[in-house]
Length: 398
Ligand SMILES: [Zn+2]
Image (cartoon, rainbow, N blue to C red; front, top):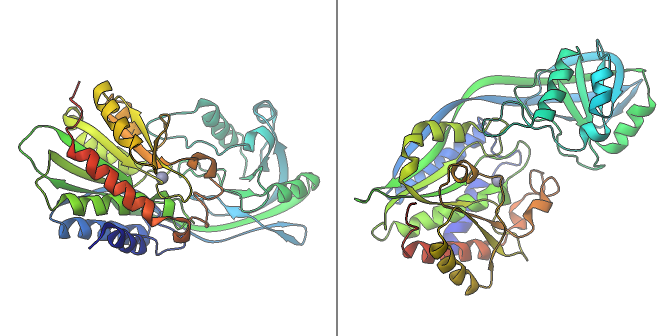
């Protein structure tokens, strides 16, 4: 069966849920089983590396000023609330430091809501100014938080943090303008959600080889809540499953480890933490990491970024790239599962689509990330490119 057919089958099996595959959800578990079964069927030894998580579900949200309801979006992982209170608007850190929020609903706008608040307990990176904002909101006794997005239509949630204790929602810029005009009039916010302890897992497929070196190929299969996650990242998963099937028909060139991470789009990256805890002692064996996230955008090349690669290996790879019209080199980019390896000095390449970073929150992480936005031929070309790359010697470990 051709790579294109297999890729289409994998994509169809993974992009089944309009609400996506967020960590801990039933869809996430179904995707985990699908990937594990596909690897087993191809002859890989499979580990489902489990970890604790929260399964969060929204049952409803509404916002009222006087007797008029306003469009509102619950922030993922928000606790429930039923609050009627006056607003206190704050636009920057100085205003927040000075504000009295006791018994009020904080309305974050301007600089405070210009970008999503970075999750406070993210394990690999901290953003102190954002931690300060979250701490102040909690310490000052706000009863809930409304964040005003700079976007008008379908704004992305500005807070997505299971470790933030206040109920919170996001509204578009036009709703924000109505709320700012309402001044200190009492408004009502009702949010009903359920959070239960759950389990989820990374899926790891291995083929052993007598050598000491290990080749890691990774793609995350979780999504943000509320996005079907075709480009981000059923595409990467389907690409690597097709590659795993192709490599299963020949002797492996070294120890092969396909890692399907579960948590790249989660506020606390629990899958990455579980992987580091489980395999951390073996990081020194990894000769190369290939991470695939967001490939397959039509009318854009598949891009390759290099991290810590020895010059001679990188040069040979650049030569291979120049022979393939749909593939191009790009600057190293920090987000994504390759980061946990790149930070340790391990040689990595990260594959994505050219121009993809400008689509975050307009296509990626939204309900619009659907299968029809993908070009499956680009995924097949990516499998081909990686197959050729991995037939060559791996970088020598430094
Ligand atoms: Zn992604």
